[in-house]
Length: 330
Ligand SMILES: NC(=O)c1ccc[n+]([C@@H]2O[C@H](COP(=O)([O-])OP(=O)(O)OC[C@H]3O[C@@H](n4cnc5c(N)ncnc54)[C@H](O)[C@@H]3O)[C@@H](O)[C@H]2O)c1
Image (cartoon, rainbow, N blue to C red; front, side, top):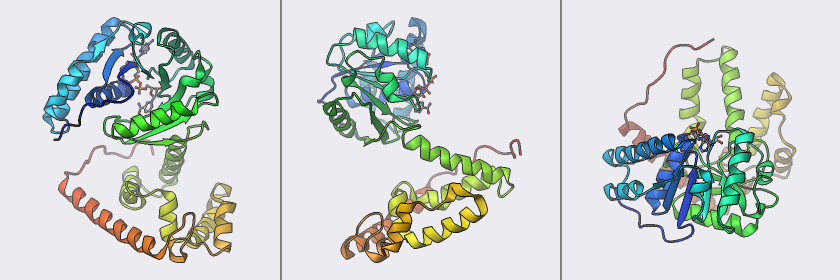
């Protein structure tokens, strides 16, 4: 496995506060990139144990060929501090990943903003707490921002960057540039409930549970449908490109049937109806949610097929992940 060059840009040093599922993965990611990391957890003993787990985890990744052996040394060099105040004194970036409890976040973000250098940027990995509310716990909130990673953080490329009303635009730009530089794919999104990813993910989850509760399919069958039917496309395309390729008129017709059977939550959005009325039915008409020249459309469809074929080949090479059996509570 190739080693990435040590990262030379901002930040040079980062504190990771809360070394659990997410904090440890992000710490590995930062350290592997060449950023000096200071790690802390709830107690000095938990922090020491977290450091041991961090090193074990990096060695495990190196043994599995997922991380260059030489990068393990960068992870071993991560420092520890006894508490948040002690971790943040000399860093440019503070990454908060303590449990999802607003009182605890208030305490930790307050301590970080008092202890960190004035120009250090402070981010929270919260999955659901409003970023505007959290920004009130930080002195100089213009340097505070949401930065929502996904599990496992080392390997999931997407990161939601969620500015608060007070966040300075240059802080957002700096975070986006930094995430791109270490190989992530940031998207700047608004501070609505669940931001974007959790809102979408939970809409799918709710319908999946309903399908099982209504006896339409077993959990295993639902998982197979999601993975192998429409979910098969998701590493490459999102809902807008996918619906443009399928035809927005087709989507409108299907939504009308779903609404009749399942109710108003499937009402076709006005923006979709308007596009269909205007003849913007997707790639086949040259425009849908997005616009396509003839040449772009041909390239998109060919690249789609190339990617799907490559994914099929990859799936055939990998052993199946058959885990979990039984029918659950249904
Ligand atoms: N688990 C996920 O898939 C996921 C994904 C995205 C975002 N998040 C968010 O990330 C944050 C952390 O989640 P997690 O899953 O890593 O939780 P976790 O419980 O695995 O880890 C939290 C860590 O914080 C430590 N901690 C508790 N009190 C502390 C204190 N006072 N000071 C320092 N550390 C303290 C805990 O000991 C623990 O090690 C939450 O806000 C969560 O919503 C989680």
